[in-house]
Image (cartoon, rainbow, N blue to C red; front, side, top):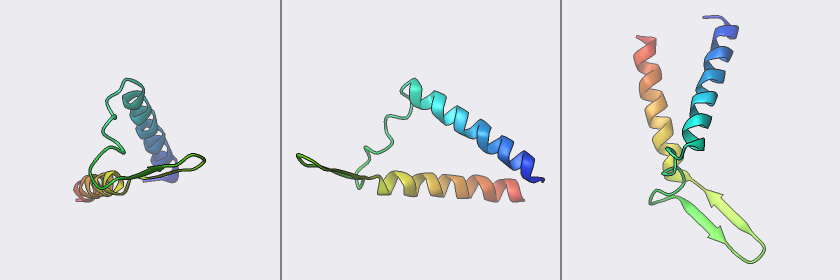
Length: 68
């Protein structure tokens, strides 16, 4: 595949994720057990560790299926 096709695919994927997020279908992201949130008076620290791990596993599985 050429670089242009990869960029088009990535753009379409980002649009789909944006639409899902806008309509509230991605409310689970960042709210799973193991995601780190700290809100102090002047600071906010947010690290969605488990959410990113889950997305990484799903994307790895999908890409391994596409590679075959």
